Image 1 (cartoon, rainbow, N blue to C red):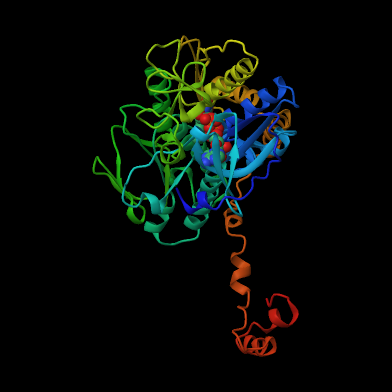
Image 2 (image 1 turned 90 degrees about the vertical axis):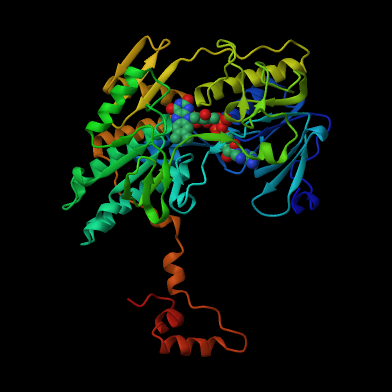
Length: 487
Ligand SMILES: Cc1cc2nc3c(=O)[nH]c(=O)nc-3n(C[C@H](O)[C@H](O)[C@H](O)COP(=O)(O)OP(=O)(O)OC[C@H]3O[C@@H](n4cnc5c(N)ncnc54)[C@H](O)[C@@H]3O)c2cc1C
């Protein structure tokens, strides 16, 4: 392993050998809900629950497209760990190694030396990361849409490109600025492109020189249809509505290159695009394949039984190890031979059963299988637009009703009453005052202006006075002498 593992610091959790130690790796849908349930069901003097995550919050990903479109404030799609997990131990850091043979994990905190934590039970809820391909130009020019930081960056970027386009006289440059490319026509990709297009179309009202027809949104999808999660007729309906809005969708097509923003597809289409958003699927958290001794399947997910207990290839339960969510291969007992889909609907419910089974095991009671019948799919395609299916695709709704179902379902599923209320207030405010279309991309580099005016430190041997004189000669005297900006 890295030198990290050889330089371990004492861990920040006080030693509690008398208690059963449960570590939740990741504080997302699985980690947060499992920890909360364990906390509720177990006696505090008998168990110590610790959640480890590099982020100080759990993000509710189904609302990321709405956050990207500015319909929900970025802060409202996350549940802060310190509030949601009050009374539990929360550590901000990255798990970089799982050594289940010795029941320890190694944590890399944001600052300082790495440390090890010992446990009796580990809950692996490390989620997934964007699954990318070695496409020329993608690493340099692309961005994912997998977390709140990316969703807000895409929003700021799109609005900023519109500002750039409105301020140039170069038609080629203008066209590239107003061309937005999304790779992947699955659920996350289609919701993202539809919401962002809806926002950009609305934003054109504020521009004298940009009309909706100037915007070029493109989706590149390798499969023969979009939204594989819904039935073919609903997928076709969504496809037609998006095309009507001017969103060009290339099916059975792959991105082959995007060097310097020049998009080239497997179908031979080429165009310049200043925005390339990668939403073409996810893969299990790589730390599992790189630095853990837990059993994994072919695509590097932790193998588990329907009880969410980690299991070896031979079917032996790995005592004290539990996993669920995007990073686990959870057998779907209602569909033999299949696995539960990687989505929040399943992850949150798996977390609850996982926690109940840990409680059962600690009490010497039998563990139960995770059994869940898909409640349906609700997909937003922008304000008042959507598709939804329930009851095994027997109930299908489209348009405003589907969009309302999407909002109702997800606001109910959003963790904490505080966030639910904030989101509802935000929607009400927006209905009254209209959408916010300001781009605050500059918050991503807040020191930019200060760095441009800051006077570099004097080299050794030069006094501050000499430095001030030299600055005065180059016209930055006001800043050195008085600390005020020279206008
Ligand atoms: C844009 C988008 C839209 C979606 N829409 C829907 C939808 O409408 N409906 C639906 O059901 N699902 C949806 N999903 C999928 C859903 O969000 C996920 O399936 C679900 O969150 C998985 O839960 P999880 O706990 O496995 O992972 P996550 O919720 O992603 O949690 C993983 C946690 O692990 C943390 N972590 C990562 N690496 C480390 C590390 N090394 N050490 C410690 N912690 C780590 C992360 O910070 C994160 O908090 C969407 C996803 C996206 C990206």
